[in-house]
Length: 121
Image 1 (tube, one colour):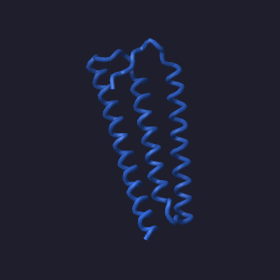
Image 2: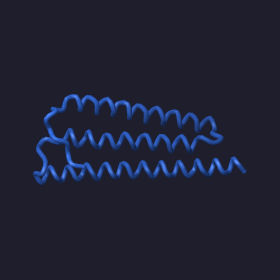
Image 3: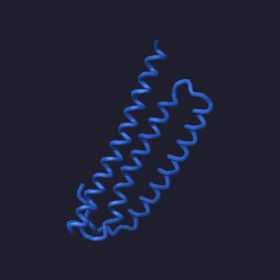
Image 4: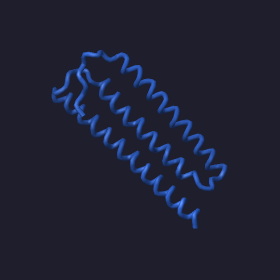
């Protein structure tokens, strides 16, 4: 009985995390597209490409964290060695992606001039 409750809860948490992954990427993409449209219309100072990428990269990093959480929940209950291996590979890839993304974001933040006003959300 308790196993079934925990398994159901893990499935729901995984589903919610998967949905959050999609929603976070969609929201970040919409914000980035809005900024691109403002740039094309001339509403933002040029070149905001770095700022747009930096902001969107933050949303992608958050989405990677949700995706990893979903994978962990899916594998949490009575995993096979094959599932553990797959999770380890996925976790390593997503962690590396997030690490490199974070490093690139930090480097871009340091390169940006301080006087530039932040982009509208």
